[in-house]
Image (spheres, rainbow, N blue to C red):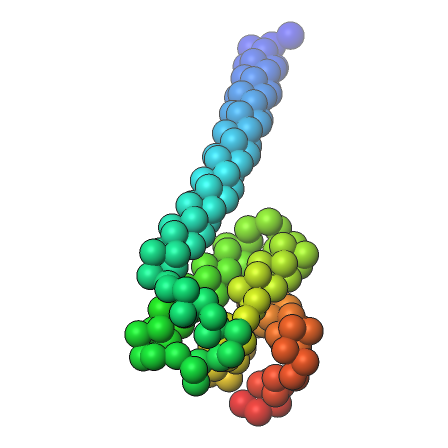
Amino acid sequence: MELIEIAQLVTGIATLIVASVLIWQMIIQKRTLDIAHNDADANMSLTAVENKVKLNTWFAENSTPELLDKVDKGLDFMTAKEKRVIQAFTQNHFLLLTTEYRLGRMDRNPIYFRNTMRNILNNKASLEVIKSIRLNTKETTARESLIKIIDEVYEEVSGEKLPDLANNS
């Protein structure tokens, strides 16, 4: 074997070793990214739960027995302060839900979002607030599925169909 052939053999072996090390580093990096993704998902879920608990606690502290009696009658039966309380409560739950959807929480499982929306729309005042939000919402491709879920749950709970905003824009 000549010196050039030996040099080419050594270069080839060195190239294989470097390629093997790079592949190993990519495998380690993939595992690290998977762990980071799982941690981020867990953190997002915990944050969502914490925010819901805080929102529900805030509502409990700011509601009165009279307000709780009026929510089933609707916004027209409430004082200005009571309207602000129910609007803030409902709008913040709606904002939290749309943010969870946008971030892909629960893999955008429609069952989770339907049940959460059903819990938000458990009284006439909340239905009126959500209807107002929906009538002033521009649909985007990223949220079409969530908007469809919201519209379906609204219709199931209220018996009223919201206008198709895609055709009205």
